[in-house]
Each structure stands twice: as structure tokens, then as C-alpha cells.
Length: 340
Image 1 (cartoon, rainbow, N blue to C red):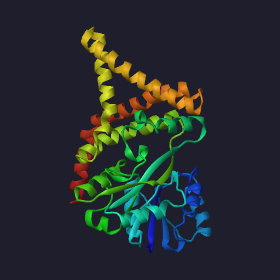
Image 2: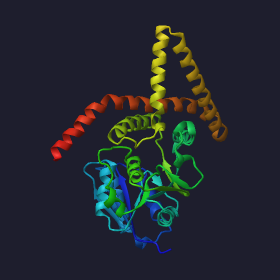
Image 3: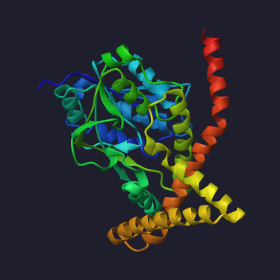
Image 4: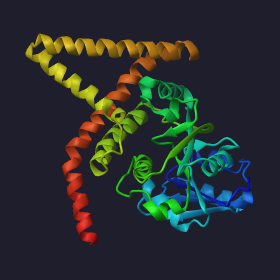
């Protein structure tokens, strides 16, 4: 197969810890370097990200550094798409590393399958003890639900994939990334692809080595923000989010209702609360024990705490999203009115 020219686009902001390893993995690809342009779209980084990229430009002239004054990922992607020149777009993330065959397999999969987007599987990695513990949690069904791009070893059509590889003409046809969404822009784009009759293909041989948050505060903040933006995304684009995205919200609501029932002395609600939490704690201990058997018993108490901490942060984030949703929708309506 004759490989086409491609534009690799990476939104970046404050990635000095990861950017050099990321660049090294991009230029270790077995894809012809002369057929790649690599666009880093910087969202006003406050660390050494841009300086490090400028140093990398000296060795890799394919690198271009673009400015994203709006900071968020969808703006960055749309800037990169507008400034790109190739017929194929590969969307990457600076918080990750890519095996040498990642780009080639992505492009080959796009061109040889009936699909509008081709992608692969997350391999979550962590740095330090807490990072390893968080990564292990995010590799289990209790940690991530039924997200196929994290758990599967099979190829096939799916609802979404991380990042992705696209034909440029797709964005001319269905539009770019939704700039209203600080998060979930990939989910929304993939929903729009499916809504317009397109398909997403997951090739399990395409692996992304993704570095997760490495502190309890970091993973809880991520969960909170994900939960919040799941609600906002669902309101703005109905159908774009799956039921699994709202399980932590249901868990938190049931717990709060159960505690209210307990306070009021309602035996039925109290019994249901006990059943729910009994089942949850059994799963919590089971998966924590499974991880500890593989990685060492020092992980056991940490994992037992991590699961409920992450799920509660996620669920309360969705509650916050529900509370803030009316104001957010009013702001969006005002912005639309001003743009007319």
C-alpha cells in the first residue's frame, strides 16, 4: 500500500513532563518521516512546553507550533485541521507515547476498512506508586465500566475510540470539533460520525500508552470534571453519551437517598442501601485483591480506597453539572445570540 501524506495534530498545554518522550515516540514511528507534518497546538502553556518544542524543532523540521488562545482541546483541533495540508489527519495526545507502528497501523486501518475513524486501545500507564495504583484501577471493569477501547482484545465496529485517524474531507462534510465542549469532544465527534451514517473501527493492534493522573487529588479532579461534562455534553448533544457515563451519578444519588432513609428510620430504604453497598464493597475488595495479587499486597489498601474515591468524585461531578446546567445553557444561548 502506498502511504499518503498525513498531518499529525496534538493539542498541548503544560506538558513539560511528557512532551519530550511524546516527540521521541512520534519520530520513532515506522511511517515515512517525509510524509508527516506534526502540528503542536499550544493552549497558552505556563511551563516549558513551548521552549522544549522549539528545541525539538531544530532536530525535527516537520514540527510546527501553533497558538491556541482559547486553550481547550476542540479549539486546538480545529486550528490544527485548518492549518494542516495533508488528506489524512491523525489526532494524538501529548500525555501519551506511541509504539513505532501506531501511525502506520492507524492509517492502514482507515484506508482498508469501511470506516470514517480508525483507532485502537488504551494501555494505561502510571508513574510512581500512586500512578501505578491508579493505572491498575483504570484497567478493570469496575474502574472504567464497559469501555471497549480500554478492555478489548478484538477488532470491530465500536461507538468511539481514543484520539483517531480521519480523512480530512470528513471535517468538511460534518464539521469540526464542537468548541462548546471542554471535555467529551471525541465522543461527540464520533456520535456525529455515526449519526451521519459513518462507522468507527477499532483495531486492537493499535496501542496507545497513556499516562494517567498520578495523585489521588488528580484522579478525583479528573473524575469530577468528567462527571460534570458528561451532563453538559448530554444536554447539548442528546444521544452522544452512553448510560455507563452516568452510573456513578446513580450510585451517588442512591447513596444519598439511602442515607436520608437511614436518618428517617425507614427500614426498606435502609435495607436497600445496605444491599447496594454490600455488593459494591464485595466488588471493590475483589478487584483490589486481584490487583494486589499481581502487583503486591501494598496495593491492596490503596485500591480499596481508590475505587470509591474515584466513583464519588465522578458522581458528585455529575451532580454539579446538573446544578450548573441551567446557567451554562443560558450562557450558550447568549453567545449564540451575540454571534448572529
